[in-house]
Image 1 (cartoon, rainbow, N blue to C red):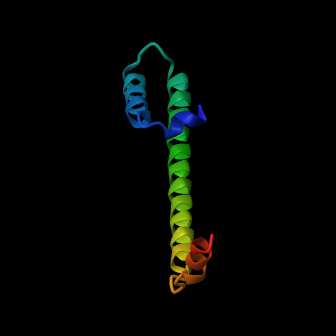
Image 2: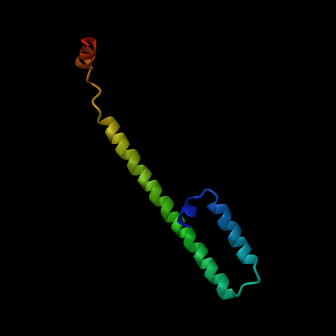
Image 3: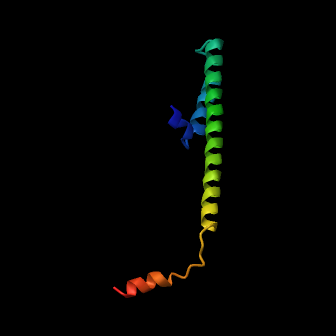
Length: 87
């Protein structure tokens, strides 16, 4: 079920479920309330996961940028080229 929280179709499926739940007369109020609470819990978990993923992406971008900008491009590579030309 957790992988469904990341699904692109989560929002559509969840909204469809909530609409059907609101229109359902076959369920007792307590059952509808329980299903509604579970649905809201899924939304909250999805929001948390999406926030965590965005944070992880930002950290990864920051680390990548830091590593990229710390590369010393001043090295001319002449000794390496010389070693290849001697072979």
